[in-house]
Image (cartoon, rainbow, N blue to C red; front, top):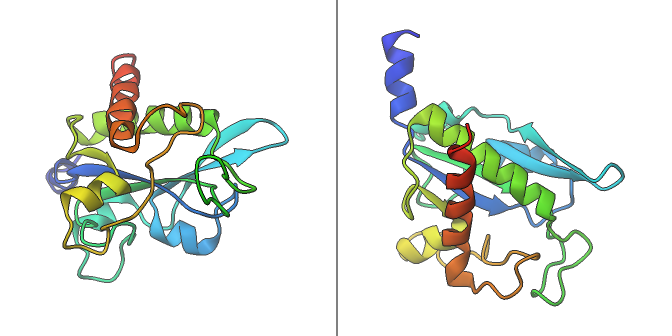
Length: 178
């Protein structure tokens, strides 16, 4: 690997997790905003990773117009991953027609672990976090008040403030097995 590419990989500083608020399959707009999308194939009960239009390294420079704009105020150096789904989501008891699936979350946890290893990202609340958490940590950005991801359907008793720690624990589990 040449020195420039090695330096660029080292500069990726965090992973920010989202839901698309769309259907189970990414559309072109969603592909433009996220580096990776986890779709759900209902027929085969499978989750698949789809690449967005931009590569993570495109977000090292967000001033050139060619980057994935996934987190208002936090795109530079950030990898954006989105779970496809949650269109029509109103609340945990009214999740709409496209509720997020456990298999999507597991695929996301594993992908996060792989990216943490590739980019030497240490798992912490400021390096692997949800869009919801980013908004709380950065209240003067456009991300303030974003709900994604503050709820995990298969862990209904997990409070919004505990979702990030749960996710980081799962990512760490996968990282230890790589």
